[in-house]
Length: 99
Image 1 (cartoon, one colour):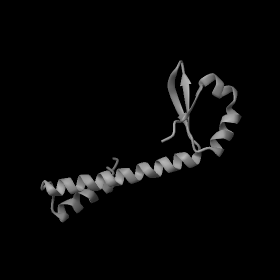
Image 2 (cartoon, rainbow, N blue to C red; image 1 turned 30 degrees about the vertical axis):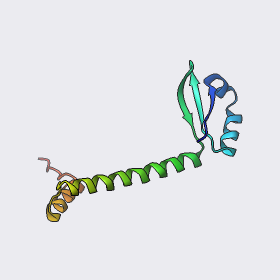
Image 3 (cartoon, rainbow, N blue to C red; image 1 turned 45 degrees about the horizontal axis):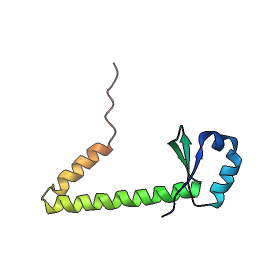
Image 4 (cartoon, rainbow, N blue to C red; image 1 turned 60 degrees about the vertical axis):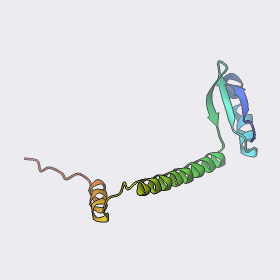
């Protein structure tokens, strides 16, 4: 695992173009410090996309695992009930007629 680059807010602001060039070339994010504490993490668009993809995959895997656990513990409902509930959530609420 690599450590991200760190910089102060003032230095980051003063050398913004240089930081953007480095982010474009490197795969390392930059942690921007304010008063000695992490205030932001700056990623290139490619890094952000990779993070987002990995996060989405993790969310799907966690949902699958939760489903397996629910099934093993008998927390299930019949298909028709599930279908009705999902369809009810998917439909927009009925509009009321104005008088």
